[in-house]
Image (cartoon, rainbow, N blue to C red; front, top):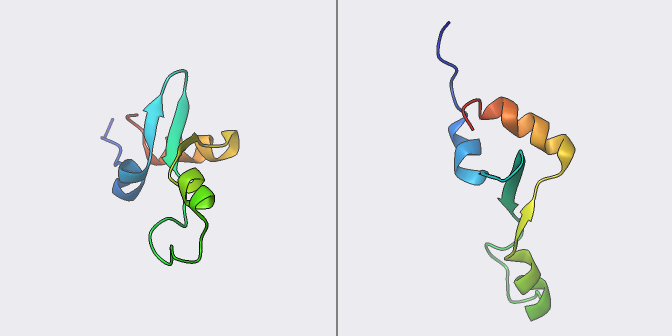
Length: 65
């Protein structure tokens, strides 16, 4: 059987955590931060667990995760 290719863009964005869960970072934290409140920026900087529907798609993109 041939080797499956990993989607490199997904490999840079997602990380496996315990029990078949995927961690990801939140969006909207790269620029235009002046108009966003401090509380909003702090919450956007947190790492969260990807939703179950997205997790299935991410595992297809990352076969060796």
